[in-house]
Amino acid sequence: MSQNLPVFDPTSSRPDGEDSRAVHAPRPAPPAQRPLGLPVWRSATFGFDTAQDYADVLADSTAGYVYSRYDNPTTDAFALGVAAIEGAALDRPVGAQPFASGMAAISSTFMALCRAGSHVVAPAAIYGGTYSLLQRVLSRYDVSATYVDVTDASAVAAALRDETSVVWAETIANPTTAVADLPGIAAVCREAGIPFAVDSTFASPAVCRPLDHGADVVVHSATKYFGGHSDVTGGVAVGDVALLERIRSVRIDLGGSMSPDDGFLLQRGLTTLPLRVSRHCATALAFAEALEAHPAVDRVDYPGLATHPQHPLARKLFLADEPDHGGATRFGGIVTVTPRGGRDAGMALCDRLRLASVATSLGGAHTLVSHVASTTHRQLDDRALAAAGISPAAVRVSVGLESAADLIADFTRALDASMT
Ligand SMILES: *Cc1c(COP(=O)(O)O)cnc(C)c1O
Image 1: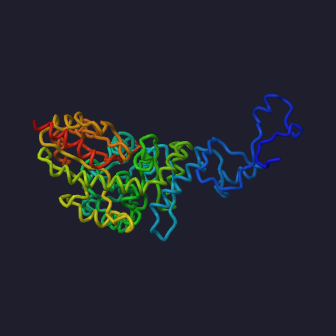
Image 2: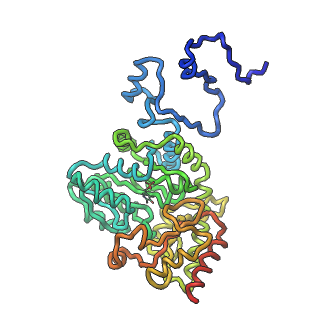
Image 3: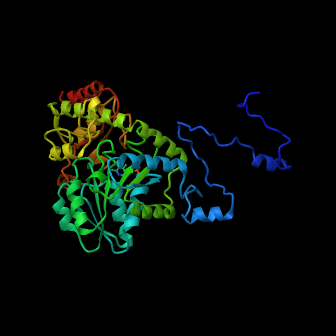
């Protein structure tokens, strides 16, 4: 008889009632072999042998799982995988936490680091959701914020106060692609004894690892490059173990925990993260160089272009393909293209594209475009846009995984049409 045919023995001890037997359906023992695919531990709650075992895990004195809002093995696997990438070059342990979204990671991090009366230093070119969190939610809890140019560490230093509880930066800014002076800000924060947190969503750890440059906590919208296929929402925070303990406890109380199914998709996404991001970057560089030369284009912002103000810093901070794969520096997959003309020129460019889709988000296989002034930065009038260095015509392009030649042809055709 095969050892592997599921066979049920009706004489085995089972409850008598039909309903009880239905509820307590038998299962095979957990396999001794290791699954290569990550199991989806789709269980809200976990059973214990004894009441004491339950109490010990709940008290965090024994490792284990109690309830999936607290922790779940599948979502922990994803967070651990991110820590292994972000912390690859460190000589100290790295804590990690999974979240239901990037904003859940960001809000829990602020709530863990701030208290009533806290002050935050944050980038002037900040992600809209984070700005809204600071201005509309945290302000009601007496947390104030000063917004500065994070390409300039002395601007951060000048904004510090006694009550400053966290300095926040984004590795690559939206949509200007300005690169934050991570080592300079880290030095300022270390000197002042203030935690330094970085939203590194636009870079992903395949482009930059802020912990290497002195950040204490790194957060990501995993919805973007980790997922990579525009089909899952998630977030993650990694970094200093003591800070991550605090962030975990806030996550548990606020409830922004990741679902096991999303954890599965995101952990699978990690498998191909370097491969995908490497290609995003190579295509983005070719795309940026081609479009910069088009007569209907006013400017192209991309850290890989020699014309970019932080190009030398990007060369220093950003990772490169392995030597076997050519060793090219990766400058990210986001390119901002500003056609000549005003608002209409930007919207018309979006409308004329065929391969690229008009959609929010970034970091997926599909190339996505968004007209900045009417979407992500719609609250800014032309004067405020100018102050932020953004043209009303600017179009943010999340370069996908299509063939570079096809993408360049799509944009070239759309731009050519604008000149006739
Ligand atoms: C998308 C994004 C977020 C928010 O992430 P969600 O997963 O949408 O909650 C935060 N920061 C940056 C830079 C982002 O691009």
